[in-house]
Length: 192
Ligand SMILES: C[S@@+](CC[C@H](N)C(=O)[O-])C[C@H]1O[C@@H](n2cnc3c(N)ncnc32)[C@H](O)[C@@H]1O
Image (cartoon, rainbow, N blue to C red):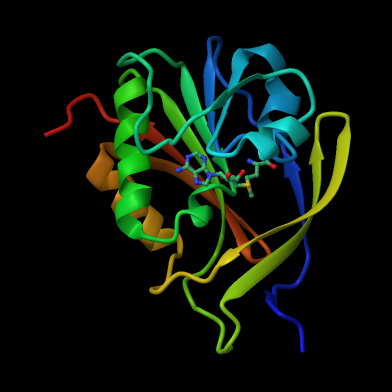
């Protein structure tokens, strides 16, 4: 038996035209997809040095815990999280990341997320899931798999929209591709 639950493979074209300025890429290690698209404008922020070591050159690489960002308020033009929030198993940790992200963005800045849709958790005894992906990003063609622990509760689009709203983001648009979704939020002007 496989040691993990495997979702059907997904093909994704990633093309995110960020505004001018610095982009904070949360969990930006590994394949470093956003760094490949936007190069030196990207700060690839990852908890793990080994993940950042694998990432192709281009972005500025910083080891950190995105639950506490060592950056000034409003210091990035946009933030991205490409299959990163699912690595934080607990909703309170995901919320901490989103609150910190809201702090380092100015009002009106965008936060695009890409995530595996875990709205309906698979009926399985396995604790880990894997999603095989084929990604086209600029000139790069990347075949990879992202895997993480299945969360204790469903984490679908509504889950991320709820957390983002609590952190001060408003949804702009969303798209589905296979078992994944791409959500774009904007930082609201007033956080109450
Ligand atoms: C699947 S990888 C993301 C893939 C990556 N964005 C890419 O383009 O290939 C998830 C990353 O999130 C990172 N991560 C998990 N928790 C984190 C945290 N609290 N702060 C920063 N990065 C974190 C992991 O170390 C891992 O490298």
